[in-house]
Amino acid sequence: MYYGYGYGYGIDPTLILVLIGAAISALASMNVQGTFSKYNRIRNYRGLTSNQVAEHILHSAGIYDVKIERIRGNLTDHYSPNEKVLRLSDATYGQTSVAAIGVAAHECGHAIQHKESYAPLKLRAFSVPLANIGSKVSWPIILIGLLLGYSTIAELGVYLFSFVVIFQLITLPVEFDASARALRILDEDRLLEEDEHRGAKKVLKAAALTYVAALFTTILQLLRLVLIVNRVSRNDD
Image 1: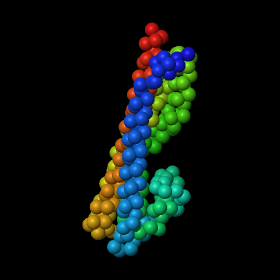
Image 2: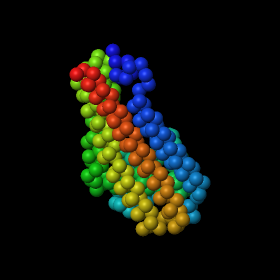
Image 3: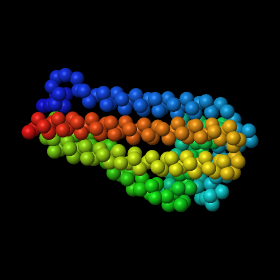
Image 4: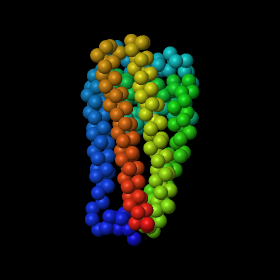
């Protein structure tokens, strides 16, 4: 048995990668929560609700078959292309804050991507099953390989885990593009005042950074797994 994954009875030095990833994720989460909280206290001058803005953006893009629904939670907002439903969280639905409008506009960006058959969005949808397999199956396979001392089995798990990294890499342009579309429409249709628009931009930038942090954290996890499995492989030799 490879106690400590081949590092004897000492502390696994690759744990530093886990700690770095956890710190990055925590900072990104604190940043988006703090930014949203700040601009959630600022109401837009025109008194528009997030629902009204979302409906306006959708209709301006020629989209009339997407429903807007409320969903429980805080910042659980998302667009479901299969159901054609835009779901706004408790913190966003019906709110008039700059933050809520920014988030709602971002989700409308995804609906527009869907309507226009935006290639990265289609690619992300295609990669979802592979990412799910990678996230659920990779760890058990890696652990079995490490416990039995079979590096080939562990390497298979690492390859499967790489699907998660690929999925998150594909996600970045999808999210950045949705925010860019949202900000452009908010500006062109003069839905927000200049200072309000800057606030919405900061909220969406903070949200986008959480995806960057998630990707970086997952890459660090993958690097750690590669180092561990390579160590076991050398021991096999």
